[in-house]
Image 1 (cartoon, rainbow over the protein chains, first blue to last red):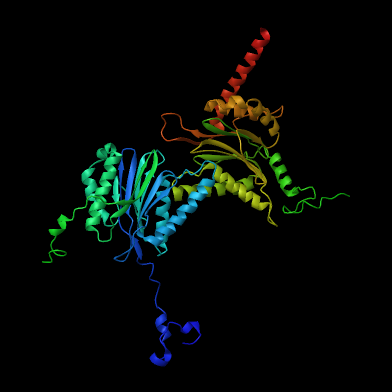
Image 2: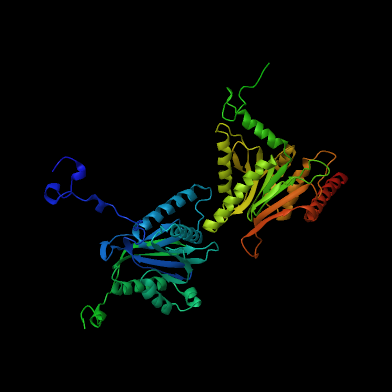
Length: 260
Length: 261
């Protein structure tokens, strides 16, 4: 080995022949913005009488590898909003920095942070839409939970295209298929949401996360759950899915225990 | 001959620590016709005296709506005020676009304050030749701010700037305690009264030369939280000026009764 750093770690010319450096250059446009790298799976949320509950597990996957098992995907903003992130974790951290700078700016003004969850959702949807219009999207699907300007519970989503959607119960990713039907069965109409208690909402989310842990291969049994009410924000991190029963797995056909 | 060597630009201090160009800009504010602003617990009111350059011309606008929750009254160079008000309109609109919320009043005031200060610290720039009164409502209620060409901004309970504004300030200082608990209409009347104090003997307030802007919190049971900025000019002023007349009559009656007893 010689002392030139550029040769270190390369195949030796005297054994393998000179290295063709054209392999080091890629041709064509950048592609690393066209797919996420380290990802978080579903976020689930539901409104109840006097607030919103939101939950997400603590896993960041690298492809199908469960790479990081203590990632907090629920973020508090000010005293009355929580944002749940699914999708790319580094893009989540970028948005987190944007939110941090807004929080600092807001707190410099005389009357403190007056930005509510609805304002925040508007802002985030514009950021996401701007980035998708630059063909460089932030690869996230976000749920914003909190209160609107009339102090009514607020829950809305924004995705990587800048599409926004509001409903009394929302879930991103796999949860949109597995959790939303459960929540719809528990709270079928507006009235049932308005009469639902905080305990009912939290229990419903825990149930959803358990089903996701059973069925979503990118999920984890450790999760965080936040409740936003007039009293403020309570976030519980490092929760564990209790009372698991895998008996149903015996009956699954096609893969696992019974291949045929 | 004495010549001032320290007023050629806005970036040079005099040995006494003064910046003459900024002081001259403040003179321009004093040349402008008077505007008065005042707040109580629910409303912020702007009142202005409009001037016409000559008999045949129209009157110069004194009060400008910036957004539905905010307006400004101007004293000094109207064209400089237009630059500032256009900037304020843009900022308000962009806040509504990106956050879906009206821009907090203190935020926009410190932004124009920063812009004006920049003009006093860069060679080749000149200060704005205009003073503003900014009235608006936000989450924290109604506000009134004063803005000066130096970049100085203050939150005020009541304020008057422009020619002969001292008379209005004296009136406001005397009545400051009353202002806090007034109704919306009483506050407007106090504003008009303060404006009237500044008039010279041969002048009076008319529907042509007066301008009133009102913004505030909506009354109980009304739709929405705020009462949008409303500009009263021309015939719209008639009831306001009549209310002013009535309140003056009431006062003189009370005084004469005291004399009688």
